[in-house]
Image 1 (cartoon, rainbow, N blue to C red):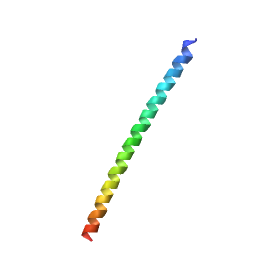
Image 2: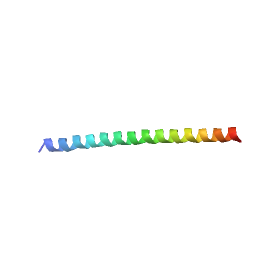
Image 3: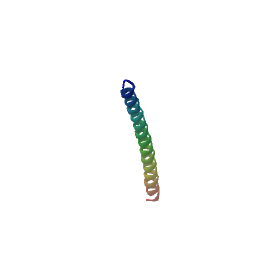
Image 4: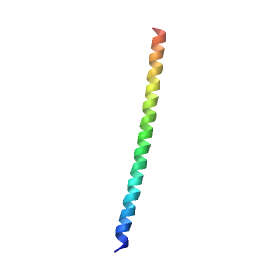
Length: 52
C-alpha cells in the first residue's frame, strides 16, 4: 500500500511532462504557421506595391 501512491504520483508526473511536450509542439507548429503566413503576406504586398 505504501508503493501505490508513489506509482500514481510518478504516472501523474509523466502525464504532465507529456502534456507539456505536446503543448510545446503545438506552440512551435503554430509559430511556424504564423511565420509562413506573414512571409507569404509580405511577399504578396511587396508584389502588389511593385505592380502598382
